[in-house]
Length: 281
Image (cartoon, rainbow, N blue to C red; front, side, top):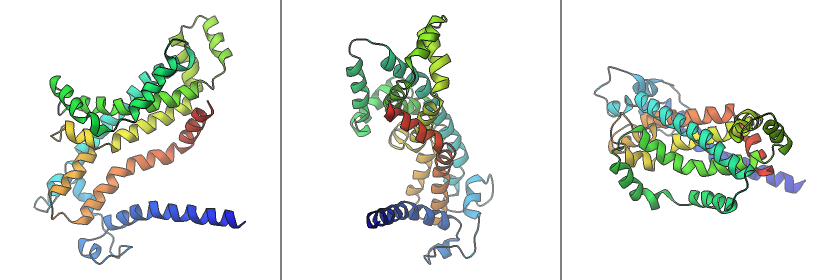
C-alpha cells in the first residue's frame, strides 16, 4: 500500500512538473502585457488580442512583433505541407522496407536493420554541414523539399523499426493464402498487411508528422524566406525582436504545439496499440 501511494505521488509530481509550464504559458497568452508582468497565474481580464495579431491582415501594423506574427498563417501551411509529405514518405517507403525485413530472408537482413537503427542515433549536428552542401549543390535551398528530405532521413529508421515488429505479428498463413490467390509480395503488403496493421501505420504516421512539425535545426538551416519557413522557425524569429511582449510570444508557443497535442489526444489509442504491437513483435 505504501509503495503504491509513493508511486502515485511520484507520478503526480512528474505530471505537474511537465504540465505546469505549459499551462502557465497558455494562461499568459490570454493576458494583457501589464497583467503578465504582475505574475498572475489566472488572467483577470482575459483577452484574445495576442492571438488576433497572428491572423490579422491589417491594423496594429506598428505594434512590435506584428510583422513576424502575421507570417504565422503561411508558416503553418508550410509546416502542414512538410509534415504531411514526411508522413507520406514514412508510410510508403517505411512499410515496404519493414515488410522486406520482416518477411523476406536475405543475407545481411539483421545487419541492415542495425544500420537503420544506428543511423537514427547520429546527432543532427554531426551531419548538418554535409547535408547543407548536398542540398545546396542540387539547388534545393529555401524549398519545402529540402526540409522534407532532411526530416525523412531521421524519421524513416524509427518507422522501419516499429513497422517491422508490427508486421511480424501478422500470421504467416494469411500471407501464404494471399500468395496462393495470385498476389505478389507487393500485393500482399497492400492487400493483407496494411489493413491488418492499421494501428501501427497510424502510430508511425502521427509520430513522423509530429517529429517533422517540431524539428527546428534543419528547418532553420535550409530555409530563409516565408515561402518555405515552417512554424518553428518563424516562432524563433521573435528572439530577434527583443522588445516583443511575452504575451505575444506565449500565444505563438501555444499555436505551435496545439496541433501535435490535438493529434496525440485523438489518436492516442492507435499510438499505444501501435507501439504495443511493435514491442510484442
